[in-house]
Each structure stands twice: as structure tokens, then as C-alpha cells.
Amino acid sequence: MTATPARLAAERRGRFAEALCVAALRLTGWRVLARRMAGGRGTGLGEIDIVARRGATVAFIEVKARGDLAAAAESVTAQQRARIARSADVYVQRHSDLGGCNVRFDVMLLAGGLWPRRITDAWRP
Image 1: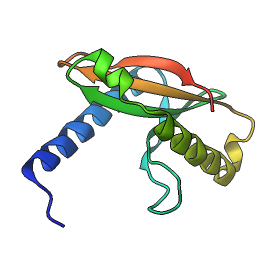
Image 2 (image 1 turned 60 degrees about the vertical axis):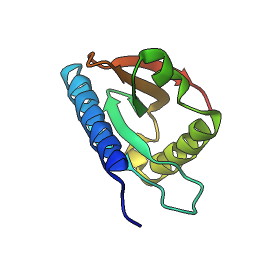
Image 3 (image 1 turned 120 degrees about the vertical axis):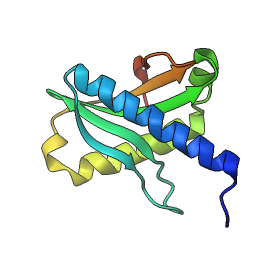
Image 4 (image 1 turned 90 degrees about the vertical axis):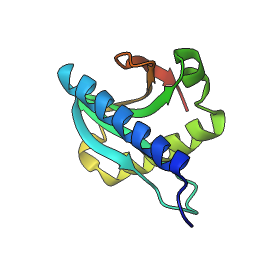
């Protein structure tokens, strides 16, 4: 399957958005544990864009870049949240050092060349 120019451009924008979010996280004291952590096709697990830790909190972060912040916020679907939550559960089980940590799900939104906007504890599974 050949990637279209539009798909390649979207991939580049997504990678840039994630890199910008990683920079923002690091500037605020977060340590990035993983990026683009995927459960694999057919597993029912979703990809987690960024896994970060600060102290006893582990955040599973979905990054969304759209034309405006409202569109970015609305683009995280219930089905996507459920897949990310399942992936997060597997991630925590595989990393025993995270067992005592507080887990939360954040969303980082980008639009129009602005600095990423973070919604902490965006949902509960």
C-alpha cells in the first residue's frame, strides 16, 4: 500500500506535534517514558502517543493537532479512549515500578501554531 502525499504530510504534522508536546512536558518537569507505544494490530489495544511520569503520577497522553482547539478536543472519540485505557493497563502491568503510581489520561491539543494546550485528567476509564 502506497502512502499518499496527503497521508505523508499528516504523518509529518503528527510527529512534529508530538515532538512539541514532548518538549513542553520536559520543560515542566515530566520524564518521557515512551512515545508512540503501540499494542499491535488485532490486539484491541490502541497506540499511546506519549507516556510520561512526574513523581508518583504517570500520564498517558493523546496528542491532537487540528485547525482549531475545539476541533482537536472533539477528535478524541470514546472508542479511542477505551483502546488507550486498555493499552495503559497493559503498560502498567508490564512495568512493575509503576504499580504504586497514580495513573491519569491527558490530552495535549495543538492548533494554529500555538504552544500545546494540555487538558489534565481528561477522562476516566
